[in-house]
Image 1 (cartoon, each protein chain N blue to C red):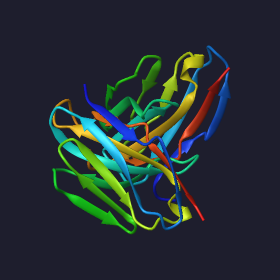
Image 2: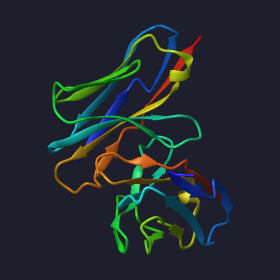
Image 3: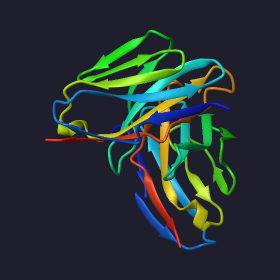
Length: 112
Length: 111
């Protein structure tokens, strides 16, 4: 069974204090790993897709990396507007395109 | 407005009543999905659709019914609501099965 574990569950940072969120996964053949951002009371917003170990993607202060066992979402010099819950999800090669397993998320709070 | 919308945004109902949650997208995406999000759980797939008139069960389909007569609409019906169906429901759509675009959600309370 595919599994996604995100850590920490919650993270509180001072503005400008860089850190990383972790997503550990087990999947029978990875098709893709996804990062989403979810603001309170809203639907998840797509950030990145990573396909293979060693791949990296960046968007503003966010950088996602992928290994064979985990993915990291690095946040450089965060701002209060980066406060949100960050969701990780994996899609397996087998089982069909609809088989996407989501983690519970890491709730990030950036304090001014 | 372009994008994906859900209605109602909030709904309170009673046990045993039928409830329909609406989802509408303007991108002409082939794929559409219904998820529920509960505390302590990641998003869980209820039903999905690859195209109009093609639907299939996800991880937690019991107690739910879907239809998709038009590409842009994907309603989710709770035939006889139960308290365990109190949740936040998200609809998503995509033309690429790997990247899903989510609606704003419907918060459902079953009393």
